[in-house]
Image 1 (spheres, rainbow, N blue to C red):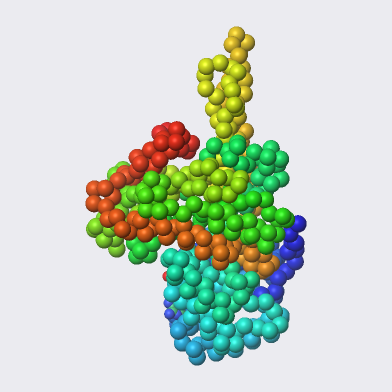
Image 2: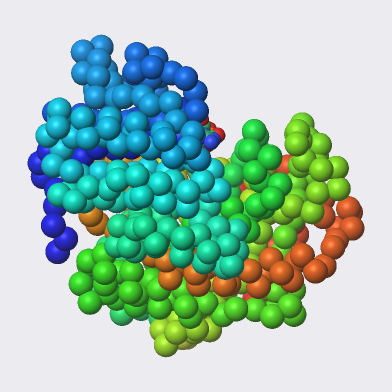
Length: 495
Ligand code: NAD
């Protein structure tokens, strides 16, 4: 049983990139939710740092704006934002850390924070290592409290760069104090996977190659690249979505049962699962992976016509793959993954497809497979497809039925948004929902093999613009399953 944080927490947050999009859209609203619930009260302060020459008043106004769409009274907004301080800062300038340290120490005394510090790096990854270095060498790390560093994605762009980054951070912060964010791990239905798997013997007993036929993971987006093209051109869907969110989900679905539900035990099992990913050679990548790019259609422009995108871009906006986790329980179970932009519908879901009963005593009509679906978003819930008896008296026929559970509006409104849960965990020192370095390493090892094979094989323009906006990706992504006699269970493009 993990310990629960029940009372007010004392901490100073130093947010590098405090004027940025992530800070305004996600971090301040999440901190406010923690404030409303009383986890943050009197004894907390936030220092936002960035290049802009703002003052505290301007910054507090920005914070109030960022929570204005939430349920909040003017009094609450004023009280909450009064805990926010701004420090104009260039992360490369040593002197600025001295100013920051003085402010941090002053706030520590004023709010009685007992030396607890969370350094949140909401900035471009090129700065991660410099910030960690300066924070440590300029004395921002306290002796009396905890010092935790929260790092945004992307954590490197391949094994080599991620290893260098990690080694550099570890010079200043030990692994136990490094919280690598993957906000998918904060999602309620991703968090529900271990609960379903390990607290129900019907699933616990069946969760292996004997009973699971295949697993399907879909992270589909209806939007295009929007204003992120500058970043996306160099990343692509493989690095942007597969290396982190999808492989973390794979780990949650394929790990063995942790001894206890503690961060150390969970991470140990997730590392083992990711270590067991079958890494493909060039031929294996060709057989098991599909890439695609959205072309024009349904009133939308193609990726290559987007701002800041090269007219002959080879960047993939869609990936589908067949993955195997070669461990004793899951060996041989195909895990089909797909993610892409400008697809039919925004939806994140996992469909676990079970094998059929060994023999159909009911006659010629084939039985449908049992499917357990985790609907991660936008409407979180679960569904189990079973076979039952059709209601009639002249013939005994089998029909599909669905057991559905969706969290009601009341529960949904109480669901923490991804960052809220993760910030809560950072305060608690619970790293279960953050990626351990070894998880990151094995994920990159797998992804690098795919990337290298693709980089060596330049495709022609025609070969690449191969799915229409509003479809569910290239035809080849359907063929991938067809080869095994399977098909995607989630097919919004056929409705
Ligand atoms: P952004 O460009 O909106 O903000 C960057 C911030 O860094 C700004 O506050 C800017 O002033 C500051 N900055 C830049 N250079 C600086 C310097 N030399 N010295 C001091 N401050 C400097 O970026 P963002 O969208 O907020 O993303 C921040 C990080 O979070 C990135 O690593 C990104 O990949 C990651 N991330 C963002 C989102 C999101 O929803 N925005 C989601 C997932 C991950």
